[in-house]
Image (cartoon, rainbow, N blue to C red; front, side, top):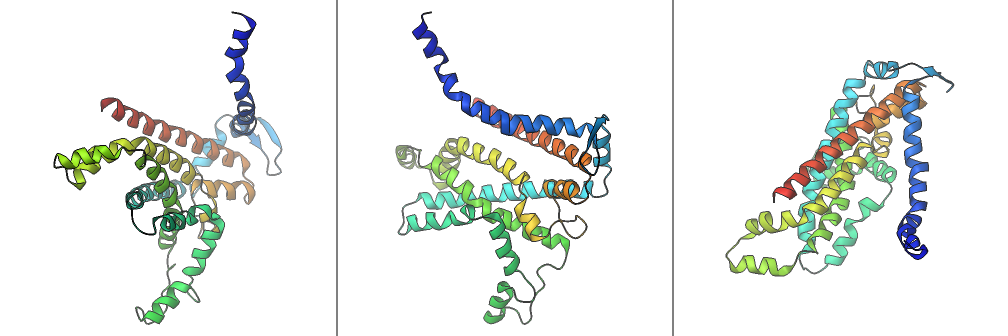
Length: 295
């Protein structure tokens, strides 16, 4: 191969080199460090000791709040990803239709996703306040209720509110991902189906869903990662109170690391969370790929 051919062969890799270096520095290297720390003895002052095997993992699993935190994390991810995907899909179907004010509706939809999560959580904290919350004020003025309602009467209800806020801010991302897939579908497919006598549900399940599945798969995988790692909503609204009852894994390991100074178990929890995400994303993508191959 001549020198010109060699340059053309190496050209793409040279262009990719900056991105590869950034990923190595800011993603791969920190992951390696966290794995190393999870197997090391770490003092409360942050001094790294020797190798201690799986002791940090054992200590993490034995923590009093571990089971509650894992349960919360499961329901947090399932409810937020599941309901935001369903509602986002429905909204995308609506926004894909032609109607007056569609551009304005699309612009309004993006606000919850574009706004800071800390601001969103703070606003919802104000809305559901017992003493002077806007929700109670509106309902009292409309005569729906006669006295103020405590919307945060238990930690279960607090957690439901957190999930609700998570769903609210995640819907726009799913809707726009699905909308991009819907706009790539050839209208002639629907016209042919209509001529053949297909109704709304037939066109939805046999044309829309199969052709939108790639966009929906990408949004679901990204959502699982984003929602699992979501920190601002829960920390702003409750900080995991009372007694870690509303914590998820991310907020709990933050408190464990920076408040309790138990850095070893915190790093072990980070690795556990990373492996869970890899497993979930792998299983989901394998399932989707099998369905696409079968079809």
